[in-house]
Length: 66
Ligand SMILES: [Zn+2]
Image (cartoon, rainbow, N blue to C red; front, side, top):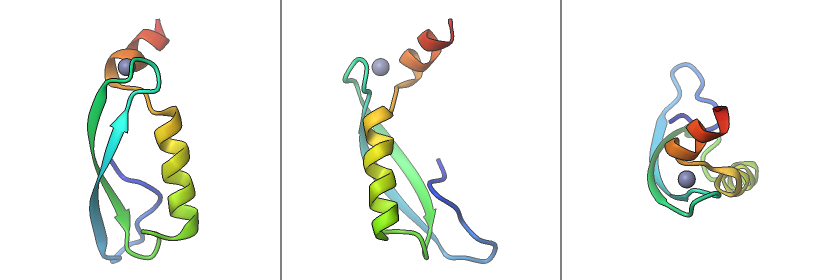
């Protein structure tokens, strides 16, 4: 999953997030990618926090559609 944006020719940083579904609390391993310029900035960390808060696992995401 790409997080934030990666510019053309920019170095890609791969990282793992401990994601937990905000609905059923299931733990999901999150393999993420981001651009080097964005990785670990204040903005980046804020967005990670928001992302974690609203994260839904695949099952709950499908339920929401129905
Ligand atoms: Zn879930």
